[in-house]
Length: 232
Length: 243
Image (tube, rainbow over all chains, first blue to last red; front, top):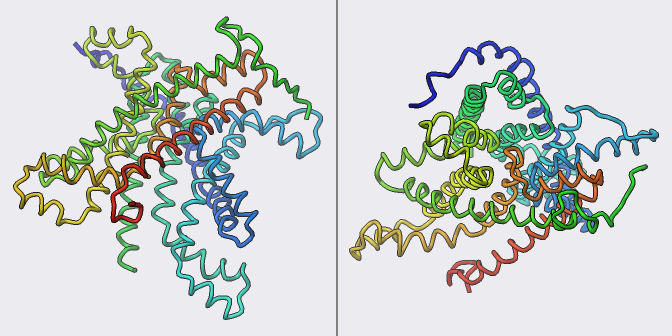
């Protein structure tokens, strides 16, 4: 006999406000801000990698390869312990400063995702034909202007589906802040699960929520991709 | 920075009585390797089956492959491990559930199967793309020669497709190694887990994580180098990467 009869799905209904207003809000805010930060820094890293200054390219390449060789869990631990010391160094405080769970996770994910976003943006920039920056500089645009008004908007547009897919991966990866006992969506579900001894119900529900959100989002990305494909 | 550095810590005995702290990290590395290797075998077997199914003319096979990939791709790996570890034994018939819970090294088997199935969806998508990238004439020529579907895949399509997708498969293998660290959440003390316990025992946070980082970098380097050699060895003459 299965144990299905002993399940109590009411525990989910009772904890819905906590799961979504606390947990999911944390997860979504972290995802959105980390995607934005990752995109900004990732674009900068991509520009460094493609710049004519070889040293900049080397540094950026080293950073990307380095971060991409490490498990996210290890990077989360690294930053969790490192950020207080960096904060101390930056502010000149006498002891390591505590930065809080959210700030620490955000810094971690921006630093980690920047490496992945930079590879996408690099591919995007390289997909723009050489004639475009050449024409931009012939029109008298500076490097910054030609990037800002000509190359980056097109690169971003071409890569939008890939960037969004990476954001879905990021959304799933934020669940790993669980290792720091931070109440993101999964962390919140896990807290309720352990408090009420309802692991089966809570984890099934968490899995379902992640599944539905990721499915709907990737379906949207596929639609978008189809629409963009017609333009070209 | 008022952090107290002590790089000699690696050669001090660990509180578990299993040798030095370095031995602890190395046993973690061994467990990471074992978990990743088994997970990779599972990912390759299931990924190949599903990837092939997604290219077959049968609608049923295509849909099964589609559902498989969507199922394993749309949930965080951590949640999938929880499903295998905490939820599945409860939903199975009592005796089977009990057997799963009492399995020696349950975290290891759960991690290998969980990471393996998670990665199988990615392998399947890569293989499907690899088979799709072959010219249609290959399949048609095989049929014209009188090969059955199984023979066509075995002797014509798969040997080509696997060679073409070798570079992305290398990254997926590296992802498998990295993803095995997620199993720390179900109590698998692999490399990241050992670094974490070393940090908890010795308070030497940065030494512990530096060592783990260096070991992951070395592992990456070894895998990438080995795969480059393999790529060169199996390269197809006439292709850009061929001899």
